[in-house]
Image (cartoon, rainbow, N blue to C red; front, side, top):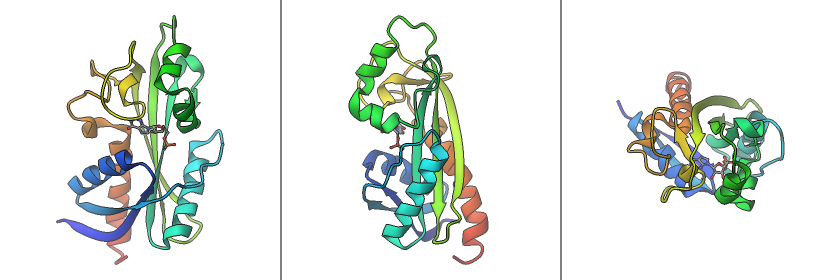
Length: 191
Ligand code: IMP
């Protein structure tokens, strides 16, 4: 049964929202975009960043919200850019990552997504998943963000060119955890 609720995905990133909306809709949950830029603290912890973003989002929307925080962790760079992925993308970008990995054979990496839900109190619920993969040897065309350089395990192409990113992406795994919890706790309790 399709369930709907007044649930806002708070982000300035249309790509993230489009994917999240499609994934959650397929799981029977509808969301709306509240487009705004959220406070992104600099921290070593993705969870801390996600928590603060969720509280900031709730303070702006005053209704149940989810936010998403992601990080690309590259093994040979000791997990860099990790929690700094957004800043690194906006500064050195995919070309910069390619330069950092020039002549480096070990290209394994993981993409992590944390979904954070907040409904007013200080109690933020976190749902985390990751997908293993590697950094491509060249920047592919298409996609957005790090899509053109991240090849998920089991695929030969990057996120930008795989046939069904939603099936296995870091985002879909975290959203699935969130929707299972949300459907069974929040909606059942009549929220
Ligand atoms: P954020 O801090 O959650 O915005 O994400 C960190 C960085 O990862 C940003 O530059 C995003 O654009 C990028 N990113 C997050 N998810 C994806 C994705 O699915 N594909 C490509 N880049 C992504």
